[in-house]
Length: 172
Image 1 (cartoon, rainbow, N blue to C red):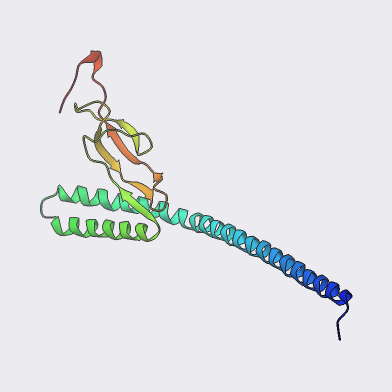
Image 2: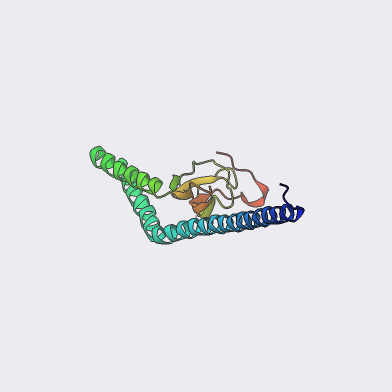
């Protein structure tokens, strides 16, 4: 017994319908996955921003504490018989620097004679002693760099050597 040709048409039509349904399901699934991926990325960005917002006051205070501890260690180094106290304050400053690193920030410093870089250094005045113009005379406070992006959160505060008057050159 032969099957009429009409049933072949029904079978092809049914297969096309199933194929179309599967294709539509796949398209919806792809769209749903792309929405989920986009929402996940947005969530990560928001979390990162929230973390920075929450940590910002803490990081600022830790940077100030680091500056004060470092200044105290430098002051004590100049006093005879205070080596133990100086080492204690320097150790506390190192501990604060490690805490800042765990928060995603690195302490950066400047050395005398280093060329002035806008964005890296913040000029807070000029030194009285002669030196090569537009170079660091002394560091006043350390800077902070965000480890992830490499951007300066807080530039290094420095005193600079100024250009000598009347075109004279002062060399160290």
